[in-house]
Image (cartoon, rainbow, N blue to C red; front, side, top):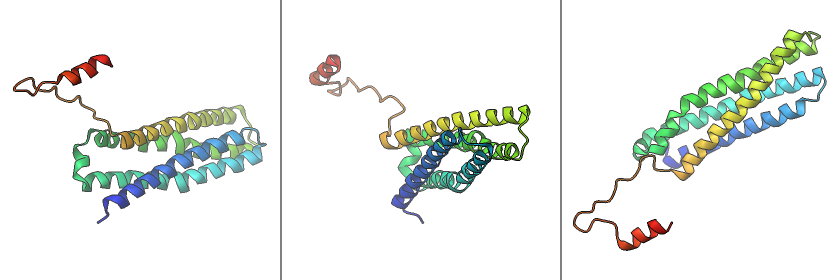
Length: 183
C-alpha cells in the first residue's frame, strides 16, 4: 500500500507536470505565431506531442494520487478543502481534454493541411478557432490547478465555525471581544 508521503510526492509531481506542460504549450504557441506554415506545422505537432506525453500522464498521476490519498487518509474524507478539490476532478479532466488537448490536436492537423498547401479561408478560420480555444483553455485549466494548490496548501474551513456558547463561562472573553471589535 502506498504511504501518505509517497502519494503526496506523486500528487505534487503530477501538478508540477501539468502546470509545466501548460506553460510550455503557452510559450510554444506564442513563439509559433510568427513562423511560416511549415515551421508552424512542426511546432503545432510538438505541442500536440507535449500534451500527449507530459500533460496527460501528469494529469493522471495527479488525479489518481489525489484520489488514493483521500481514500487512504481518513482525515481527508471529512476535510471540506479536500472535498472541494475532489469535486473539481471532473472539471479538470473534461477541461483538459476538451479545451487543451483537443484544440492542440485539431491545430496540429490544420497547420499540417496549411503547410501542404490547403490555405483556404475555411481551414484558416478553423485554425484560428482552435488556437483561441487552446489559448484560453490553457489559462482556465492553469487557474483551476492554481486553485487546487491554494486549497491544498491553505486548507481553509469551508463552513463557518459554530458560535461559542455563552453558558457557564463558555462565552467570549473580554480580550477576544476587544480584538474582534478593534479589527
